[in-house]
Image (cartoon, rainbow, N blue to C red; front, side, top):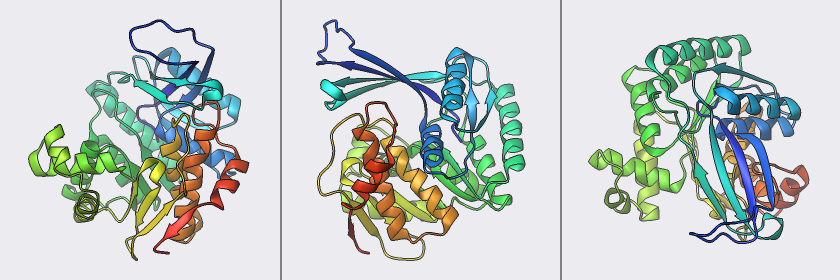
Amino acid sequence: MTLNAALDVTYRVARLRAGTSHRVEEVLERAGGKGVNVAAVLHGSGVPVLATGLLAGEAGRRVRADLDARGVPHRFVDVPGETRRTLTVVEGAGGTGDATALNEPGPVVGPSDAARALDELAAVLRDARPAVVVVSGSLPPGLDEAVVARLLDVAAQLGAATVLDTGGRSLLRTLEGLHDAGAPGPDVVKPNRPELAELLAVARTGSSDEQGAEEATDESVAEGAGVALLRRLGARTVVVSSGGAGLTLHPVDGPPLTARLPQPLTGDPTGAGDAPVAALAAGLRAGAPWADVAADGVARSAAPVLRPVAGELDPADVARLRGQVVLDGA
């Protein structure tokens, strides 16, 4: 479920320099947003999936068209305005250089549209009867975390396992909403390290300013404190991703497990952070061991970096990288 879906646009240039004009060598376009990326990875792996969330305007129409072209099943709810675009500028031949991303905020969702969208998305869940529900990504302006908490509660009442992948402040507010309502927390949450630092800063000071985040950036202290805070608010398994450094999985029923590649890869990282969430969803559905889920998550996270189109994934890359993953604590 992607409440702030996007049309991902990739520009390829020889070199990006501030303050100058550039000749764009190639323009690529694909449906995006964190949950959409998760659905695309699952679909490409042969896992039955339904992409849902909110779409708006011409960009939303193009998101639907791309999903249709790729054969990804979807059922989105329309809201007024315009679905956001994310623009990624990638340097170097073949898209192997640095990537610079610019993210639009998304459509403004008013109170009446938010209430209608909640009802329609809850109906999508009831009709689909899913085994796993993933709510992933940012919220568009005007939509608050109460909507996320309500949708997770609906999914839990239907018997689905739930995965939540949102930013630090949004993650904290969603968990607080579930906790205050007496509803179960998500089965899995997946903050990255900066989001975990932001979460701790907000919990300590009520602000996510740089000073508060800096106080929480000692990695070992921040991760342990962040996991403990998430657990107090009802989260079960916590997965902390670290970009090219891999991820650490903190199971609710066992010791931490770290998975990583020997060397990080270079290229366009768009969608790479969403592939581990797809691995988590597939693992929950299959009842896979956590070590397999962690290794699969790292391989799937790295594979899109090697591809020319944002978020694209080649199963051959996944298989090759899967054999290179180093597991600590298994």
